[in-house]
Image (cartoon, rainbow, N blue to C red):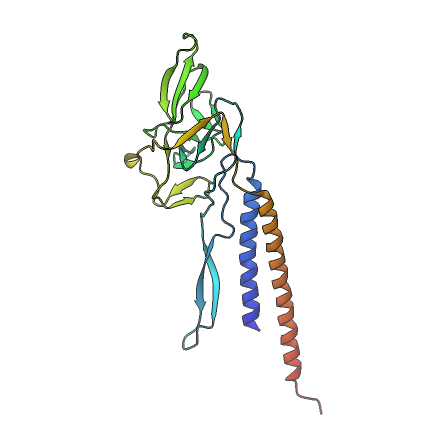
Length: 256
């Protein structure tokens, strides 16, 4: 009965990992540009065996972390000058508070007190030299499709635009991308500042925000399926106990 019990326990463990991923997706369903994690990731199978015995059991023992959905989220018009969405493939280049570079689809930008362009999670938006972007005081700000940022400076002539800088973006094409533990997307091996080249083909849309690509309905359905799977394996363990006890009773010698 140990085979049945261990198989059921392993399946319950996998179900718990899937449920944790689904809960993570649901909690970020309203975060702009969020990329949903793949439920459970990709599990790898390994043989369980001992010396001089047949390899009779194959279990899912580990999953590949960091996998995420790259599906486009819904584009919503906000009319805010500092809201920017990426249309199609691409990522903004960002830097977190620890100085680590990353890639993000989050475009709910704002200007910090020192004039630095940041998103609402506090990540700094970088220019094409991978340097934090700073924006002088302005009456209006304009962000072109190619990421170039223009302003109408305070005190300047109305209608006269001044080029400030260009937002760094990359398509991520040809890179093996994974979502890191902080939720930021990074290529395997990290990002080399000296080797980075901005992708001029990434298209930006000012005044729009891309929503999370998580489907709340699909995640709720997944949660129900995962719960049923978990309960089924609890019943299998109980059944294995009953079968084991019945088998043990048959082996008992009669008294007298």
